[in-house]
Length: 181
Length: 198
Image (tube, rainbow over all chains, first blue to last red; front, top):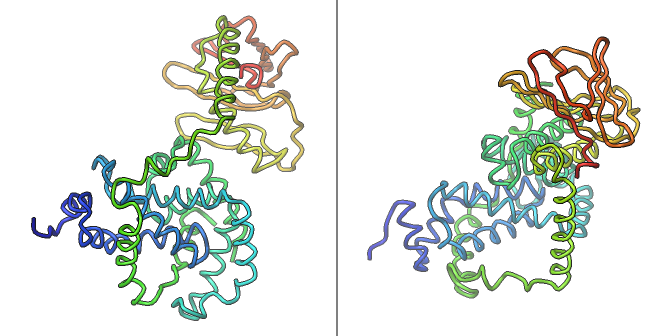
């Protein structure tokens, strides 16, 4: 069987354990997953760990992907759930928030690439997102950054559309206050 | 600041970009970890933790409570319990965000909106769920005893009595959930004290 070049082919070959196909899927979605996990954690180190966790979980249950939703949506659901489970570990969250507060001034220096003009805004927005409860943050990440509708976000988060709307409403009210120019 | 202005600010924050080398190595890292671990499509059943003993007790307790509540509700009006449970959960979530400020949560065909008090001065009282339907158009409100809400254009004071009945009192009209009947000429009203029902 030769190497296929479309996503459905990669999934088919990935199920058989083909490393090249799995690598191709990672390559296609790694930036999307990293962006999502970063916005959920506010930490590059945790975002990298969770991105790995999300891909590993996805591939370990690749045979359960039925193709009813897009692969990206399915992967997004796994990644967001990994982030929500991470947030549940209260001790870890508290520690990260403390580290975030301590390191807020240093983001943009070190190994990540942000221009001088971008860094303060990124810091401010990320700090705002991190102050939100995890479920509200997830609603913002899925709808604002990933462009999902409320219904799609509800499906991803396993809750009702009304709940997503409320979480978004509450999150926006707080973010408006915190991010006021 | 409106929603689109806020979204613009949120989207203007870039995700920090790891070095190009990281992106090149990341797929290989995942594949290596898969090889070292359980492989594709096999880990899920093994990762599931054993069912804790206490969960069996909890499930039994839930079953007993569920049966008891079910029997108790047998003679009550037929509003789906999951709908009331959803409403109660929603109210709890919103109240936690805005303590002592939530006057009502209104849902109608235009969407869901929150009615907040200017000050955090809404006294704690029984949460109530009211639904008014006129033809195919329905409006539901979650509010508290003692609050005034507008239903189908009429200002009504909402009250709960000690027996768990809901009273709607307007300038020219009184409606009670104990007696039922019509509040409007062409409308149907349902009302429940959420915690009593649940």
